Amino acid sequence: MPLEVARVPVLSDNYVWLLHDSESCETVVIDPAVAEPVLAEAGRRHWQITQIWNTHWHPDHIGGNQAIKAATGCEVTAPAAEAARIPTLDRAVAEGDIVCLGDHEACVLEVPAHTAGHIAYHLPDAGLIFVGDTLFAMGCGRLFEGTPAQMHANMQRLAKLPPDTLVYCAHEYTLANGRFALTVEPDNLALTERMAEVEALRARGIPTVPTTIALERDTNPFMRAASVEELAARRAAKDAF
Image 1 (cartoon, rainbow, N blue to C red):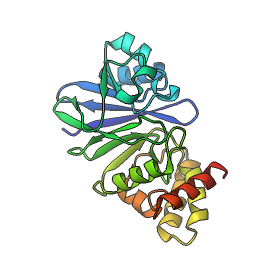
Image 2 (image 1 turned 90 degrees about the vertical axis):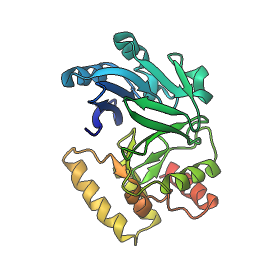
Image 3 (image 1 turned 135 degrees about the horizontal axis):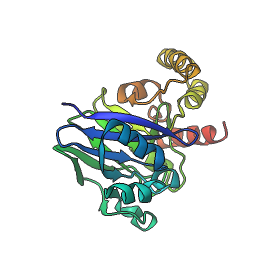
């Protein structure tokens, strides 16, 4: 059976993801901001949490680690470059490392810029990637600890993934990102059509994530930036938007 993904909305706009393998009966939590709703959702589904995968050290991505680990005995995997900032860490990983959920393999990709050690977890056989705060639907993360050159490289790298790859980011930022994107490419028909869909979904309280690499190639102003300089200008404009 294919992997199952469950969304747990927490805080004001965070998504925590539960990734479940029915063959091994294992479940991994990606970026738990808080513990209680995550434990409740796993319990409701009768899923046993065996792992946590963190993409970066920010509190709204690791805040639930300790309580979930205490409740389940799960193993915490997180970026080696940020190990000192993630006290619950059991396994430190870096570019090219493999983490497993049952027989499914996730390859670790280093995608620094939002934070210095940010990573993503790509499951090529399942067509999934968990990107934390690096790539958003029609957006990218703020450059808190990295450079426009790093983010541009990230965008170009992610754009080369198969177009039908499902992209799971950690925030519901799509509506605001799309409004900015329209100021960059007001004549982009794919973007205009997507925004109409996004506005309709959000008006009904329906999530807009996951997205796909194909959608981002067509509508994301940061993935579509032709140069480092163009991405830098767009990121600065978005920060002030």
